[in-house]
Image 1 (cartoon, rainbow, N blue to C red):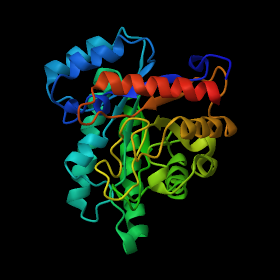
Image 2: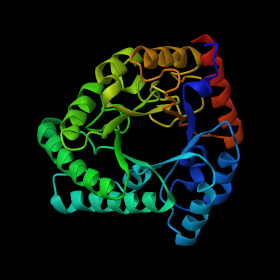
Image 3: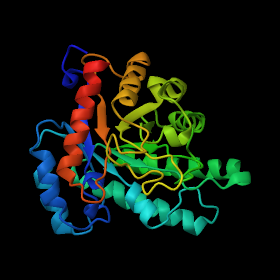
Length: 302
């Protein structure tokens, strides 16, 4: 591309993945988030739960003048507590719903415009029943989010490698989105380049199935599919990690597929957000710089 990538997208980043010490709703949330807010490369940021009300107010004050689009990910809250929006037991399912409602309230408090969730595990033979329960849960959450001025999004994960979620492949995500849009037209699916290899789907297959109207948000990152690898599964290592699936060539293909379905186009500027995590001796700063360089390189080749 000859034009600036900033003309085609708002580049975002998942704060709690780049700074994993903040993933449990504690730690140096304000201080690390400040580093992202002060970086003009980013037009969007995704945060998660903040347990301390005082810290939450500091974050709200930080984000308010930032001129950034703010999103909220409820995935850490659900995953860390093993909460399941399609659990067969009503009391367990209600725990997950109540947690997400609390996240929606918190997201509205700090000025977020959208909130993302994920489905629970794929139960195998009872998949159809679980899907109906998930629809019920997400409909309830969409109503709560709408009342708070937020858009609800569901992120598709893998169905057989790591998270083993009910909503994995694009066809299942499409079915859910169609069910939601009858009552909540702004509902959509988050597609993550990191997940495509462990969904056994190519960018063109996944994006071509969902098409523009069912895609609400985009993540870009990496995953490891190699059995026995220390970073196997959905761990979001940096681009170019040895044994990883995604680097510049794969991101080029992904960007081209986003243009083909007209999700990207000059002047549209949807969010395309990094979801990358440091491992070993890697620092967040290096991993974030790696992600920026990867995107800029891919953009020059797309």
